[in-house]
Image 1 (cartoon, rainbow, N blue to C red):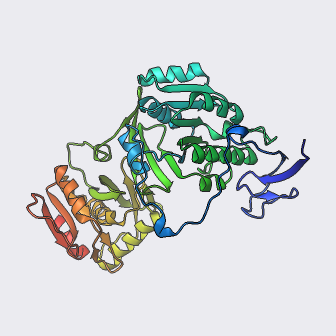
Image 2 (tube, one colour; image 1 turned 45 degrees about the vertical axis):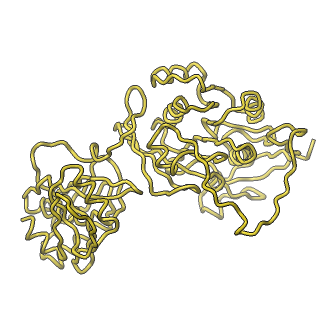
Image 3 (cartoon, one colour; image 1 turned 120 degrees about the vertical axis):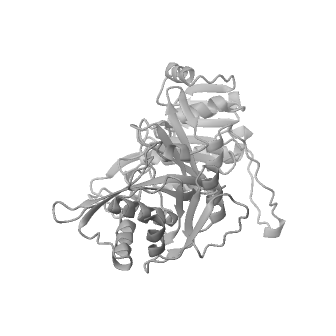
Length: 452
């Protein structure tokens, strides 16, 4: 038996210290350093020692390295495939985080039941009967999904050797513990050790591994920050539990883009893929109301039509309020200053409230023109036709600036039935024979004259 060593870890950032101290010198948080006992022991491979083969890596000239495209495993879930970049890469480690009750376990169980490959679903949080009840509610029938309730990594690897699955799902990484670390499950050292063992298993066997991760009250994945550096892909499952829509984002992806977006609808029988997000982001009101405008934005390769709602009213308490939902408040203040300075609208003494419907957050500057249009519509109390669509950036001089991939935005607007598209005259539009009317403007004053 090796000597037992005591060390101290910060539960917030994972920094290690030789002795206890009140404040972590790395993240400056107080009372987050906890003592953990580590057992220094010779670690066995995830396989049996007699079966392991020592491999020595040798340097290779870069032009001699094969550049063939990595083979991917399709998941039968178009939204997940889009976010992952085309499917699951063999040997990859994918970490899925999200709020409690948002649907992380439901999503991965549903995918496990859909996959045409042999899948081992390991749960440390639910019993087999609970998982069976959820599977019956999802109404997916699959004979390739195996369920295991276990939290000890050594026992999990024994079952893997017997079952030989094609894909491994762990729910969740915070419930696992290893014999090589004597601290409790969920501690910094246990999470790091269990993740290291799973990474070694995935890279040597070529079997992809899905990990579910808990998050802290700040919205970060629980455990050390190094956990997100170790895995290949970090996915975030977002949404309000009081609403039915869920958004799957990629925060890190070594095998694809991080700007892709997947949208699901939570139903009583599981998660439904939303192939046309514009359905849920645009309200179905038959009446035209003032203070609303439609913007054409992009999330990764996907064009979206979103509805901007604005409310402008006289400030009652003297100090005007500036409130936004799903939009950058500082950018709203900038646009209001441009309207006051360049277009002559007196908004300094008025409350301005801005909302992006559907509960999503948008960082695309191309929605600036729609934000301006919605604010002016509410201020003048004149409605904008629901067949109008906007896509352009606003500069500090009041000029209408061009945006990228304008052709894709116009085609999506035309497909959804919009008849007029407002954009910058400096955009290079290569589309021909389009039925939608394209209005090219260069100043905010041009927008005002066209709309009001």
